[in-house]
Length: 218
Image 1 (cartoon, helix red, strand yellow):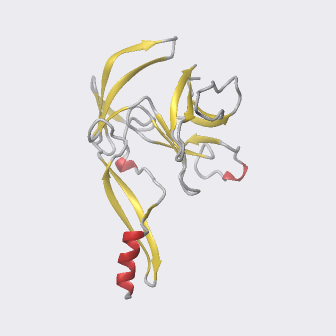
Image 2 (image 1 turned 30 degrees about the vertical axis):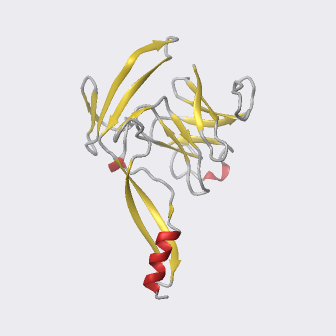
Image 3 (image 1 turned 180 degrees about the vertical axis):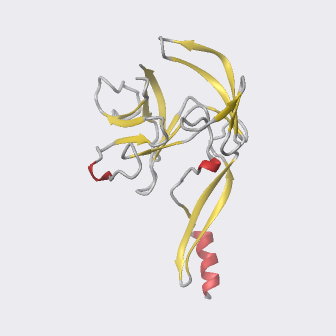
């Protein structure tokens, strides 16, 4: 078998996605450290030109001075995700390429999403926790609050957003913090916001992890 045929066979059989990384030019949603031109329903990212729309589905329900909930249909003009795939090594080296795909989180048509927020666990040691807020964005969570800080002394099972939103994700098994959800483990993940709001996620997955929002409090 020639080296070229070997590379083609490897790319067909053993191509695996690499760690996902959201580049600013493809960023979706509303970032904390990004400038926007905003209208009544739309927001335009002045860096990458992304258009975001938010259409409320029904009325919102306030449950406290700073806490409320409701559903909204969101749209982002950045429809494509560019996933880096790595093939196996060959005599000529490792072949890498990017494969464009429609964003798989768009559950209401290309670019459209209805969500109350979702958490995704790492799928390998070189990937990270992801939080997908209702606005259609994506937030990566790191072991340290700021880039460049060594992770050697980081707290276990505590992760931070590095995008200026100051979100913190931590694990808890305390019955005072994690309410009981039938069919799920007792351990939960708590996503904490600077406002004091806390979103509680439980794992509903059996073979693969499936973290869903089960409670909000402030």
